[in-house]
Image (spheres, rainbow, N blue to C red):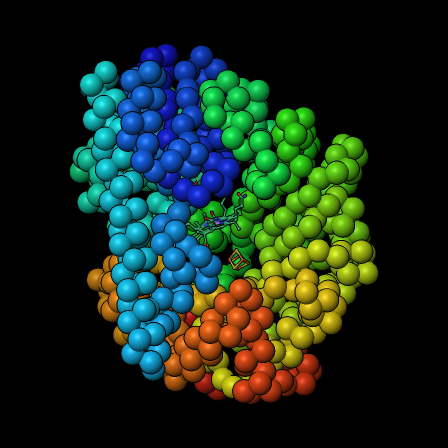
Length: 530
Ligand code: B12
Ligand code: SF4
């Protein structure tokens, strides 16, 4: 296929209606490189499930693509929230930990529902890709598919046997890969492999992405190639994605973002980000999600964040709101003022634990004392909205004492922002491939080298849903009690029960991290896995 005859169809595979920013950015990039190429975006996130096949057929019959770009956002479902087939965490915990046989049975049945929904979605997406490809080949026998996106980036090794020969599986950002494919250049240096011809290279995901300077997405063009774009403009419910940078330099032991996006932080120029936001603003958008792995990945990026927020102020977009993942150890009073001034009305801090000792062992590079001070600055700057604090209990070396410390830390955050404003999001780590924690589990013999990270069969899921003994059953029981007592405020209830049972440490104990032998040896083991 040469660049003049290419017709590219971007299919965002079924997903909760989160703005399909990945497919939009790819189409924008290709348009900037090859303005004459015909493109079309088709978002199955906006189509009712019963109409998936029909809608896909129709768009292919109309557009007759030569290249199908399938964007697959998410697969994994371990979350304490109502997932697509029910609350997966609750089902799993009822099944694993409930003493009452009826509750266990309910967990088993719920788990079955979630599991079948999960496998159903996997098969459905595979089928949609095959179907789309076969139908396109009726019009253009040379047509082929490239599959990428967040889900594929995490599980790229497991994708080898799922799609037809010749399909390209891509890891991380796809702009330069698509560009090379269209130019007919070698893709050997890109983070991808072609099914039936190559297998994924060892540590492919750890390779650095090809550098790229991002410019403002051209939404006039996007509106032309995406007839359903308006879907996301009609209500105020959506936070539309805008990326301000790529990459995260940290090494948190359970996190895969840092390998998906790479460790090298690449800043999108502030003027370009603001230009992009203004285009959306002019279309009526007022809510933005800065989709960065971290909005302020480290102290040396504070100036970039300040520059961006100052330019947002200067742009006159005074009635917007925005949200992001924020490492709250990297705030300054100036940045706090700007965050409030530019309308930040929600942020997530993934501190994981309120015990400095554990934060250090998980290699998160946080100073919890600094986080508290910065939160005080943010409150003093007038921040009065919701903060979601993500806690993942029982990752490494959790003890009753570290739980007491987490309670103390959480209560201090409540004292700063107000108890109604601080939402404890209780996660258990869903162990992901290519993380240090996976390496640790393999080393310890908890997982076998041939385990399937995509399996949600109970015997695998029990290990991937990281909640090891000796405290695993205790947390299981606490969570079950919380769902029973107050299912609508699960996080706060878990904190209340933990405090009732174990009490609260002095805040100072939470903030200091003694070096002890055991923890150090685990830390060294994790370091050795780098
Ligand atoms: C920001 C973010 C969110 C925000 C989104 C806000 C918003 N309005 O957009 C919020 C907090 C809401 C969120 C929620 C969830 N998220 Co999230 N999220 C992310 C994050 C950090 C960035 C995604 C993003 O938009 N990036 C910017 C855009 C431009 O990149 P992109 O979409 O990935 O597209 C690029 C590449 O992927 C690639 N690409 C995309 N498609 C294709 C196709 C082809 C063919 C090619 C070649 C390339 C390609 O090129 C694009 C441009 O560079 C990623 C992790 C990460 N660092 O990537 C997780 C991630 C996408 N999320 C993930 C998950 C699981 C979820 C949840 C389902 C979690 C849960 N269990 O509740 C929920 C979904 C909630 C729901 N309602 O359904 C997973 C998905 C993979 C998986 N494990 O299944 C990821 C990868 C994180 C992880 N832990 O693994 N998320
Ligand atoms: S958890 Fe956050 S800070 Fe840590 S590596 Fe992942 S994205 Fe970076």
